[in-house]
Length: 419
Image (cartoon, rainbow, N blue to C red):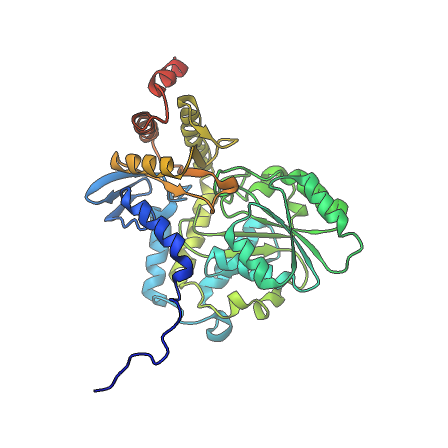
């Protein structure tokens, strides 16, 4: 009989270094439902789902315009699925592009008024690809401290020197750039339009002024602000009136457009070289054509229905001001991301479980993944939430937090404010 036991057993397990995280995760599970392993029975609509046999209000989907069930987008995807199949089975550089990919890039370039557009399989890969391709060794990457993980990972992949500046602090950015004056290499500033944890926006007009003064380039990640901000939904750069100062716009289809994928648009000469230098583009299977087709349709719907942005922001204000009136600590401004800060992780986990038990699903965000080590409950409002749904969410928040001793008589305060 063959003996397969190792002659020299490993000194430790490969996952031993993650033991503290495993223990923390086990402690979360011990308090109730595992917040990082939710499995819905079915998604009923952009605003409701069934979970463990019960209907819940969806307040954690990033489905800002509610387009995941849009009839035109669904039909475009179904038609493409029937005629072009389920996937491409390879990258565009190896297996070629489908017409759907080119149609999507043309639609994005037209929408943003840019000469170039490049589509990636995910928004995460868009940031990996762009940051690792446009700057490299000898260059400098000026990165907002609270940037998304994909931006940090793209910075590491690209080998440029990373210089962090304080979150939303244009003056600190200017001082950082001033210290690099005369240094060789390009300087690329990277910010987000709307930050995904607490929903604050960048002071983009001031950052653009620093960019012009210091002779840098500027990239804006509009993942959460596309379809949300600006007269045409082009994001914060449009809303702030500084689109001409933004050299690269990156974003995703997995928020306002209800699909998956990422993109970059630009007017810079030489942009197309990224198709043969950008590893996350070159060595990843391309978007299924059905996804590309549904995204083109969703983009058209977003342009044709600007009233969706109005409804979204009205719903966001209703939830934001309602939570604030109840006594919750929320972000600096109302918007589609409404985050509630709690005193500590145990409080956040307990409140999250209470909300879920009463039919409200939203995101639990804990340190170290949060700004300044905050423990957050992160809600995402959609254009299709009803006033009744939002009011029900407020009532559930009030009851759950009061029962846990996190609030006093919040209902009385809300009633007084409404009066």
